[in-house]
Image 1 (cartoon, rainbow, N blue to C red):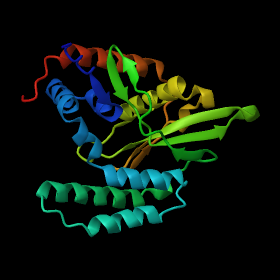
Image 2 (spheres, helix red, strand yellow; image 1 turned 180 degrees about the vertical axis):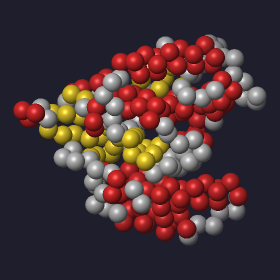
Image 3 (cartoon, helix red, strand yellow; image 1 turned 180 degrees about the horizontal axis):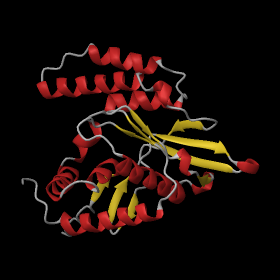
Amino acid sequence: MALKKPDPPRISINQLAEFMIAKAARQREIIRRNKFKQDFLVVYYKEASEAISLCLSSNMTDLYVVENAISSLEQKSPDKIGTQRRLTANIGALEAFQTMLDDINFGEASPELGEHSPPRLQFHGVEVSVRPEIVLSAKGKGGKQLIGATKLYMSRGTPLTDTSAGYISTALQEHCRRNLSHRGDFSAPLCGVIDVGSKRVFPGVKATAARLKDIEAACQNIAALWDSITEHA
């Protein structure tokens, strides 16, 4: 019987952005979490992320979807403490988002939900999941079709900085270039990040060449470390 080929190194763009500004010990922990706890990372803010994405895709006209999500979560009474903490964190994220509505402005761009499982970006054998929650389309000069993407960042424990948000914006632009070019030219201003945890909106960055090289170098480091990371520190 042929041996199963091991899964390639994988990391989400939000985790990669943190990795790139973290110290060595934290970098190894980030790799460990992505290698052995991927499902946990994806579902922790599931309810909040889904409701916020729906609200954003309506261009902030459907605010009831957030209110309904809060109400639904408040009515749940899970037996496990861990589940209760997760639901409380989701409620907190939804309430934080409600205070940010005046800071979010897509301008003339039209928002829609992003694909659930779009192609990952690959750098040095590492698969980077960008998966923008929102895809934006707009008309540029001369009627030129423009495309962009918005990423949600939910963690309260590790808020984004201008540097880490810039890396996420760069990856969003690369995602548009590689996977959405059939819909138009990517637009840097349309590739921003919404950090719900710290209630900040980061605009898309224009200078991406150096940032992209940093992403590639970080992925090269992840690939080199991946096999040495065990489930338990």
